[in-house]
Image (cartoon, helix red, strand yellow):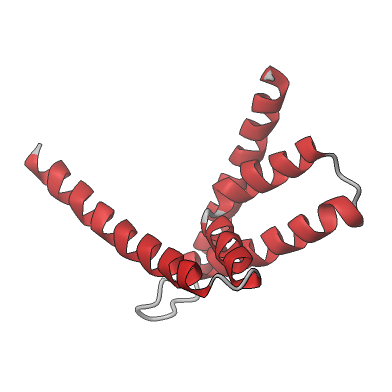
Length: 125
């Protein structure tokens, strides 16, 4: 278990550094009011999450532990948006339209509300 935690931590550190590098590169492009770094990380992360998830077992023959390290460790640190889009895609795949829309709307709305609440609490302290 300790070894798995260490591998997750290393993968997470690599994902964090990769996120920072992509955001830095994108910030040099100056895309106007659109946060290109966040957009790039989320789209790249979603693509690679799908690619890794699909090919990890069938083509790459990775163990479940290695898949967890890559998907949870690296991709989780690179972007949680990839997991969010994957979960939504699973709901769409099973034709759970209401839950898929609710997942998108709920996470975005609740995320913004939680952010504002955190700012308000931070200012109050």
